[in-house]
Image (cartoon, rainbow, N blue to C red; front, side):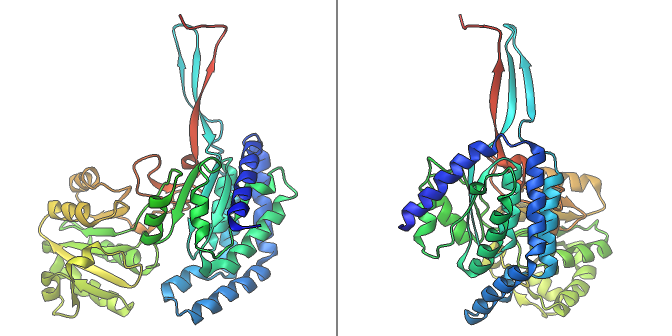
Length: 419
């Protein structure tokens, strides 16, 4: 069977499974997710063995350390994947929720009800945990899912998918509700993006190049974010010890992810006390700091000069841009001009200043006195996430169960006809 027909058949099977899945009761969906979690733990040795194949290939291809970190599985990460499935099972089922009810003068009762999209296609790179996270979220929200992972995680994705699909066979959830396109043929993505009669939504997760490609070529609606250029602004009214901890966490804790800080803005009144200590800590952690002329001067030229391109760059690495600003307005203008509308933070003890920041910065997630690293479905209490949307329609921020549903109007009458 050729690739075109194989993907079309997978999409047809998923469409049929989606109709059956839409009526599976919550308790049975939850039981299926618990079975999937147990299967991951039971088969962890198999998963680690297959993951080692991908890690060996990554070494041969000389992939960056950040990519290898995203690719690697461990007993700890497999346990976290299982816990994520269990947490998703414990969440409220959005399907069937009545969002609003209107009683019309003619006696009609009109209800706005959450309903699954149907079939969701997810195109992603490098992180094998995405395979299980997305399967869990889609099944809980009543959606079938077709996954297309990157070639760098091919063995890991195949192994996780096999374990989970086998585990579904003893549950009320049809195994055809999950599909994996494991071809490394570049045409596979294009073929999936052409299935507009069978697939209802596409969610790309990965680098900006992948997401732009998907958005430009898809015949199916796409929810996306292009990149995560996240900022932290250290105000003149900041608690500098707090700012130190927040900025260090936002950059160093996991630099290769979209919610890591890429630019640190510091008010001139705080810069002299804050920057020398903060930059020294970053250097100890292996962070390459690139700064504006003022920050270079304050740091006694221990940091590189930032170029105009740096303010618009998502490094996904231990690299940080630093700029000294003269006002809150200058910080807000910089974020709105150079940011990606993903996640941005202010560190301040001034409540009015914080409120102005929250009202003025146009980003999906905004923080006062906290690290941008919390932009994550699990951290937000959503169980997990499909991705972080920087769109304004239909979803914004972490996409989890509610964002994987649409709605329909259900109208109850007693014989009414329109005059």
